[in-house]
Amino acid sequence: THSSRPQRLLRAVQKGAVRGDARSVVANIDRFCHHSEWAMNIGDEKGAILDSVVSEVNPALALELGTYCGYSTVRIARLLPPGGRLITLEFNPEYAAVARQVIEWAGLEDSVQLVEGGSGDWIPQLKEHFGVQSFDFVFLDHWKERYLPDIHLLEECELLRKGTVVLADNVVCPGAPDYLAYVRNSPAYQSSYFQSHLEYTKAVDGLEKSVYLGTTDA
Ligand SMILES: O=c1[nH]cnc2c(O)c(F)c(-c3ccc(F)cc3)cc12
Ligand SMILES: [Mg+2]
Image (cartoon, rainbow, N blue to C red; front, side, top):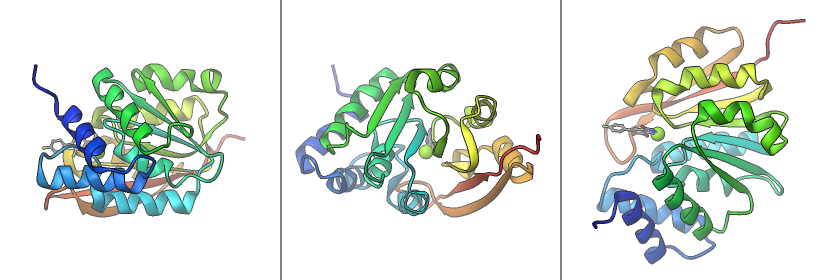
């Protein structure tokens, strides 16, 4: 009946962070991961790059694939403009349960909608279920094998518009070579790489930022 790592991470937030203070939730998760247990949050170094891209896009509507414990969910949601919304998809129910509580501790539950389920099943339902047209910003941080099929699915479901920014974590470690080859070679994207380090370690990792240019169809 031992706790899980996500549950220990949540306890660290509830113990150390100020309720309603998103910055302190982020700081306490980073402290926990630096000093107690590594966890696969984007972390402070790559998180600063995420913050700068989100601030530049200033999305009214954002999508995150892969919530985990809600660390990047909080980083993104705290930067949304008034009325801005973030939809985040998580496959693992245990992660989702922890993430809901982390998001609530940060006081961001009103601008975040967490959906439990697989991205492959949910992406085709987002328009009718949430009444969304297209996303201004998409963050890929779920599973490297899903990056390529899911960006194709987002295109097919017309959930991207000219100028939508797609940011992908872990393009080096664990790596998503097929995804990188696609966004870097497709005329539909203007792609750029931000070198950084794997969260809480010295290993190299990076983020790929890809701006959707739309299709050449008439
Ligand atoms: O599966 C993942 N989904 C989303 N993000 C991840 C991540 O940021 C990681 F560092 C890692 C990771 C896990 C173990 C390692 F040894 C290295 C990276 C995995 C994921
Ligand atoms: Mg990641």
